[in-house]
Structures are given as structure tokens and as C-alpha cells.
Length: 111
Length: 114
Image (cartoon, rainbow over all chains, first blue to last red):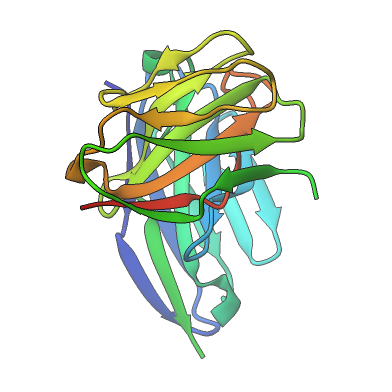
């Protein structure tokens, strides 16, 4: 069974304190890994897609990296507006290549 | 603004009642999806449609049905609601159902079954 596990469940940072979120996956043949941001009361918003080990993508203070077993979302010098739940997902053969999501990491950045 | 519209935004429903959650997209995406989101469990796929006229079952399809009469609309029906269907429901779409594209999500419907 394809699975996605995210850690930690919650993370509290001070403004400017860099850190990383982890997404580990077990799938039969990775066809991509997706990162989303979700604000309270809203739907997930697409951030990045990574397709192969060694690939990196950046957007403002966020950088996503991918290995053969996991992905990291690095947050550099975060600001309070980076507070959100971050979700990762992979396509699964089990449901016709539909995305299966991790439970998410709740990030709170305090000023 | 291009995207996905879900209605209603929230609803309190008596157990045993029938309810249809509406979802409309204006991006001409071929694939559409319904997920439910529960605390600690994340997003779980209920049903999907790769193209108009076709549908498929996801991880948690029991108690739900869908139809895809045209490209834009993908309603989700609860035939006889039960309290365990209390959740936030998200509709999403993507250009194709191959898994190669990110999904665009709606803002969700918060459903409480009492």
C-alpha cells in the first residue's frame, strides 16, 4: 500500500528561525511528489512538483528537495505569514494515479 | 477568476437526509476529484472522474455517489447521511488524471451531520 508520512505533526518557530519539514513516502515507482500549502478555512494551494531524486525547487523562502525515499521542505528565515499547514502528496497506482496525501505539518511562526 | 466553486460553504444536516454538494470548475480540466479532510487523517479520496462520463472509486467511497454529466460539474451526493460523514469536503481538478499535474482545489464545504 502506498503511504505518505509527514513529520513533525506541528512545528513552532520564531520569526527568522530556519527549519525543515519532512515527507517520507513508500510508493511503487515514484511519478512525482507534490507540496501544497493550506491556510485555515481554505483549500490546499499548489506549491511545487518534484519528479526525480536530486531535484530542487524554490519559491521565496521555501525550497523543496527530493531523495529516493523522502522530500524536505526547507523554510529559510520564516515570517509569520508562512504560518499554514503544509501537505505533501504522491500519485498512487492504487487509485488510478490519484494523489494520496500525508496528514500535514502545522507550522506556526511567531514574531 | 478561474477556479473551482463549491456550494454550500457549510451545512448542518440531520442524519438520514439526502444531500448534494456542488462543484463547478471553469478551467476545462478533464479530471475532477472529491476528498474529505478529517483532523489527524488528512485528505482522503472519495471518488474521481478522469473525463466527462466516467467515474471511479477512491479510498473511502461508501455512502457517497458522484456523476459527471459534463466537463464542468462534479456533484457529490450523500444518499442517507450519517454522523461519521461529518467532515470538510474538497473538490479538486487537474488537466488530466495521470498524476502528472498538481490539483486546483475549491474552498471546501464544511458538513456537520447531527
